[in-house]
Image 1 (cartoon, rainbow, N blue to C red):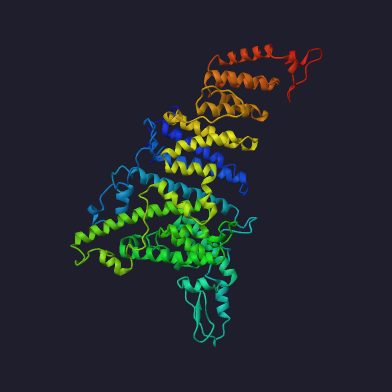
Image 2 (cartoon, one colour):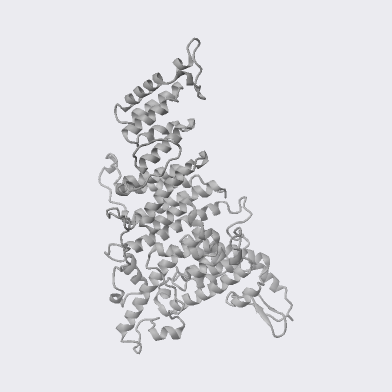
Length: 618
């Protein structure tokens, strides 16, 4: 909400940003700079730019909740550096006090604080929601990039083709060619029933899972269109755009899919709303259980169709069978994280992380709804009473209705560290080892919190030192900016960071990790002529002595008049007053004391005038 504008506010001088706003702006800007380097290709540089941008974006989402969310359970006042204890999920209100309120309002009031003066969710839930919103934003950016290339130089478009605005056009055309003598039937949930004999029928209905696993009777074009439709819908669900997924299914002639996907209260159908689905607790529980069972069966069928766990280390397929995408959607909506992680459409690290985080939130919400239902039952007088609200379920009735806790999925109480451990159970190598990427490792560390944050910062510094190639200097740049940010907002943590061993013979003395990385990065900038314009800025962040020594050494290799003028002007701009004079004095002293016999003309250095030695000309 914007603050009301004061009279003549536009004429007032712009006020400096508050500290929190400045931090968020820095994190957003760095993320956008990284993401802007993506050229919509699949090479390693694009992957690194995407991962780096996603890392800074995660920090921005976590920081928007508060510093305690970004540096979760990081304790620096303990002598042993022990982690702070993990806080538990605390409800803002007791569901038992809201018996007359609809379940949707209960969720908002008890978990998120959207319906009253509550201060907001507890820290574990706030971090869970921030992390889920972050991964949805990551998928949203990937979706927009894919849509920008759809049907424009792409042989694998995301959306179904324009011809696909009715359900299974080739199937219906084939049905119309059936003779009147042929026995058979067609219904919305089965593309085609074939009569192989007078007594045997085989159906490809999505509800007839066993038959679907054996064979698919959809014509090839219809199956491909279905796979693209369901892949696009799954992409939308991952991006937090569930309403658009429902609308896309309707527009492509499959409104029955949209209706089946809202059993848990996701979105609305037609002109209605989701209050009905949310209100009927019995129906919601039964729908989720059935979705989990179907998702598991469909997922097994998809793997048996050519993408099983045994071949999970192979290259990812561009388009899976439609069965796999439908199973993935049902697994997401029903919090069936185990079924999702075994599904081939979750074979990337980002997809698996979204499945875990989405399930964690859904499980917490289900527990609140269960507590609310039990409070209603108790308020009504027990299981033998007449229930005044629709969809109420007593403990005994849950077993009879098939919506019992048998097979229910247990969460981790919004503990992201425990939740992320589920990724190790994935049969897909890209998921299990995805955290080995240095940027994804950082994302995991900041989501987990505690000692993982300090451990990652130190590991990133070691990796930045080990990567010597010029092409890898991007990670050194990343490590420098990360440690600079941590030092500015959490200096107590920055001073505890260990400095890696340097094997290039450079002596820096007793320095902090911040100083160490800045010296490395400034030296790298000074080694490349086209980066000289950046040296003064980063040298100014050093301590005074290191700043003067480093910049004086740098100026010894700057010999063009225009470049000398630029570097000296930048020194006057960024350095403390009078520091540029000290730097010049050191330069002159070093040139006088230098060994003239070791003179080597530096590329780009102008030739000495006639009659003047190169050393004196320099």
